[in-house]
Amino acid sequence: MTLVGIIMITYTKESIIAAHKCCIFHQTQIMQSTLCGCFHCMSTFSPDEIIEWTDQNNPLGPTAFCPKCAIDSVIGSSSGFPISDINFLRQMNQYWFKGRD
Ligand SMILES: [Zn+2]
Image 1 (cartoon, rainbow, N blue to C red):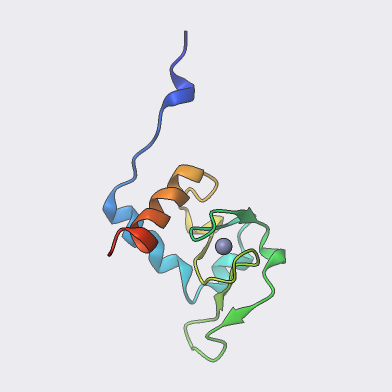
Image 2: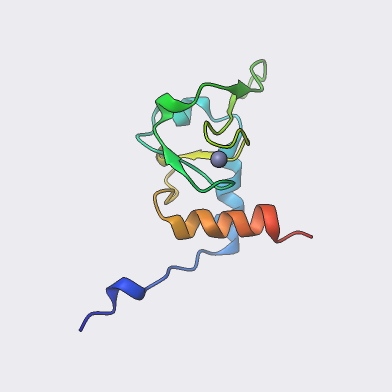
């Protein structure tokens, strides 16, 4: 038998915090990505689907709003973080939206 199907990676707090830096001022990174993930609604989508941006005048670059839930919690695959892993998005969600009250 194989155990592969039940392995869950637990990401470190450091990587969860580091990944959060990739959800703002990231337009260049988003446009270089093949896939984007949102850790608010935990959906994944193509960067082409993003239509709304904020921080348009910030010299660091614009920030994407998620096309599914309109929250600025989008990370692109070119950041190097495993945004296609639902477990990663879940842990991000838990830490940034649920773990601080
Ligand atoms: Zn979303």
